[in-house]
Image (cartoon, rainbow, N blue to C red; front, side):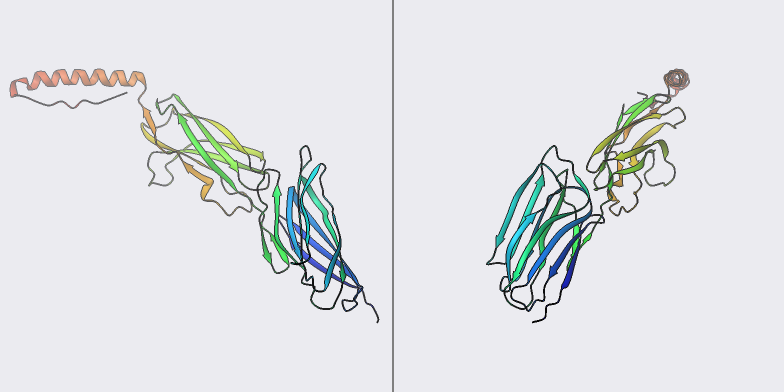
Length: 307
């Protein structure tokens, strides 16, 4: 029987620009002694620290005769390297061990050799596939037929904001701390702006406390930013503090980019000299008012409070 070489390429995309490529080099499938070699590769991966995949095949026509893990780290640990001829599956799972460096780039993960024992559909497919990064978080993906399409995750968030002291005299500083987190799997650079708002309903009346840039925040890490609010020209009253990190390129999960302080700060009050002057004026007015009205019976004086 005449043999023909056929090449089947099964492309599986994983993580940002990530592709698992199955390259199958085989003889004509109707030949009972034809071999089939499958190479599983990861392409364009970032921060890879572990993987797990199951290759399914039709064991009625394929006999798995050899499998070779090709791991991109050293040291490493192979968790599973198991063939189930009854179910027609091959499962390989492995992780890097410290002090191994997370892998970035393109490399082969395994080479599997089959022998055709009969003709028919080989049933090759990847199932239960997973990649993890060095922080233990999964690298997400979607499967479309024989492709696992990359879902790059860009996600920054404001996760905390506090202001102290909760009240200050006009002109005194208020210290504001903001905590941001990179929830994605890419290093991110972005700005964070803190606002003070007296009226939550009115848009555009906020004071800008300050803006800082976060540079090169690694995936799955947090950073604390310190702001100082100069209240010299701030009107008296109570204020809500909030922080905003505008979406980075490619970010779609934006609900957590803005965070308002759980409670308003105590407020901005008149400076001490203004308070003393106001209290003195009030006391004199009360005395004069009392003298003038004492002949006309009882009266009530409202007491104004300054902290």
